[in-house]
Length: 275
Image 1 (cartoon, rainbow, N blue to C red):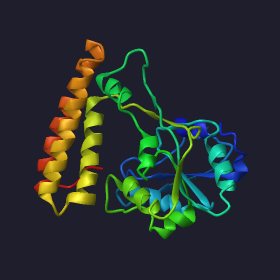
Image 2 (image 1 turned 45 degrees about the vertical axis):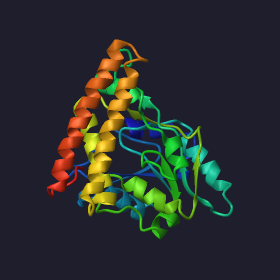
Image 3 (image 1 turned 120 degrees about the vertical axis):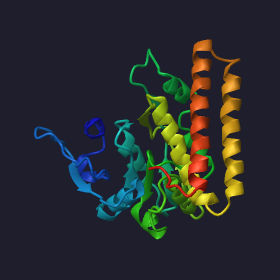
């Protein structure tokens, strides 16, 4: 609801765009309050095939426009979000842009009283500028021509995580990726450690499916390096932050690494990756 309300504040005239909401939860049908109304074209649909990438592909196929914008249901784009992207694509006369992306700053439930997981994300967050330098982006702040997405077969629906990285790297092997600082779309920091652990287990699972499903030794090395990076980060913060923040980060890193170990054994024993 917050996202739909925020989109109503976009400065780009509503006749230039539409919003497609694709629900992928079979146990929670999509419905809006009877008194809810918006000033833009809004279409709600259900995608029964499990996975966010199947839902995004459904949205791509149903979209009427030439340019597709992706965001998540809990994100809050700036009022100029669509207008900035529209102007950039309008000047792309040779259609050289494969992906347009921008910053994803965090917002907090209670800014003056952060939970341990929010403290952790405060110092990690999303580095969309760094992703773009490597030719990748996340689906929370992504614009592409519909024709480009279709050229590369859209998202791989067999993946449950890492699908945005996989597709964006394929696209940027041929087309340009651009990062615009003014193309801002805010994301909530994860409030609980459990949510953060699940996020990293999903990421590990996506990496396993994308790169290591036929190399358990390679996945072992990747997981070990993942764990070492978390502890290296935590121990550095012990000397640079207050004890409250540094100990919170260490607690979170312990939980994430325990989750990584569990996910490693779960996957190499043939378990399913997390959604």
